[in-house]
Length: 135
Image 1 (cartoon, helix red, strand yellow):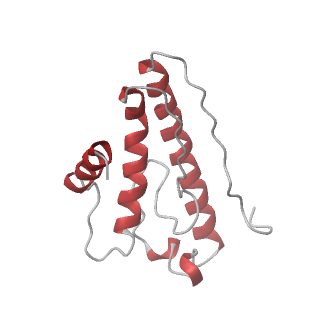
Image 2: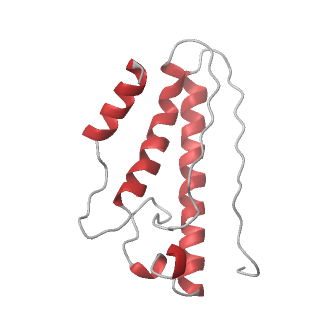
Image 3: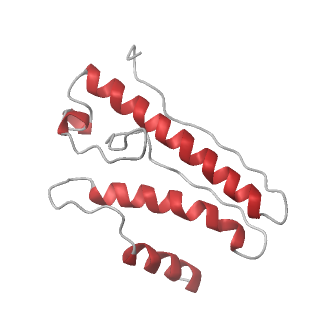
């Protein structure tokens, strides 16, 4: 582990953002928030860089609401393979996560552009859609 990796890892361990003993996806939530929190810091790392990030939002479990709140209602992830228990929970969970991620990514890109000394090339690609006729 490099010193930079250690600093990032240490910052994550000392800055756990969500903790609920009875919530089965606490680790997942903290990993996704950690990734999102680190992205605006990348321009401060000296030298050229190529950054690839795979954010696991909105695949299951769907645990983020539209404002980034954590959805602890098991209806959002209590079905088979951590899917929603019904269509209503699916729609609300899926759309909420998309809203949250879009807003966070817009803020992240604005922050990166504001502090980058060299204009970066930023490519954002989604790889998840709804299955079947969900919408």
